Image (tube, rainbow, N blue to C red):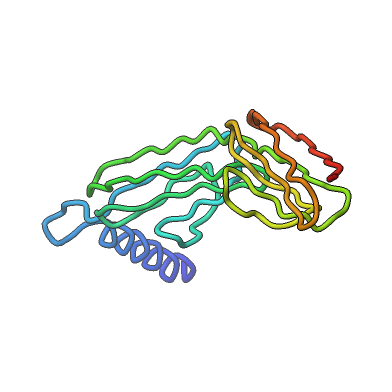
Length: 165
């Protein structure tokens, strides 16, 4: 009997506070919900740059506009913008695309690695690239430039090994 006198009021208070946190004095919802899923699952959810949990989950957010990023090691980041409306459920579903990697080496080492005319470092270098076609150039003082074109598909792992002359 004593247990019921203590526990029931606590449960009632928790329920009331839960309802109040999601509604205002007029009984209207003050927050909305965001359902986030991904394939593969267990990716990190970033809302406006802040880590909020992992997919597959439902989050409660105040009404407004948000930048959503879904990140998983070895996959390209999925980004979108959403607008949360009080009392409504917004859904975000992401199919994550595997990162493509290009390993670039040269003899001699230390050649500058250029990808689409942008310097990306020196050999030996592994690059994470999105799917697409890239112009690769290796250059080192005293040697002829090496140029090649490479097409990367999602999840590709390719290698360029150049002997500079």
